Length: 168
Image (tube, rainbow, N blue to C red):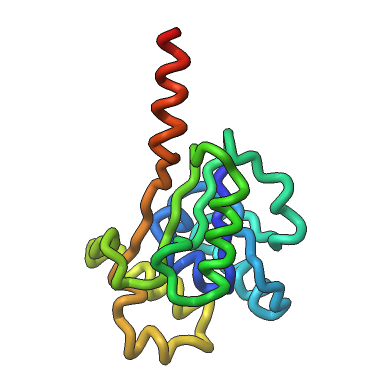
């Protein structure tokens, strides 16, 4: 199962558009703004295999060793809640397998420019689902032009220690 942990409604599209638009996944919202959660249900118009839930309902069910988890980057995110959630995810698991960090900070070194078709689709998705924020996309093109996702790699010490045990 793929889980995308989004501190705010709209982070799931800004940070993980290429996942949300193409793969079956569960969006786990931290903030429980009922009106925005209802609006987020419109994601199903773009991807019928999306489930919407809240952090309180789902967090303990995530298996960090078999599920794939996308969370805000605890190092590069600017918003304190994003960093807090990223650090919570970072501390929740031991070896880092199956965890990817995404960013809504488009000045992060690992962002990539989306293909023009993807940019248009991402902007349409943002406009349709979160029209109250359309002024943000109007003046800040970076939100729909870029995407940044990076795989978390575990501590080198633990990897080496595990490799040495295998040789014994």
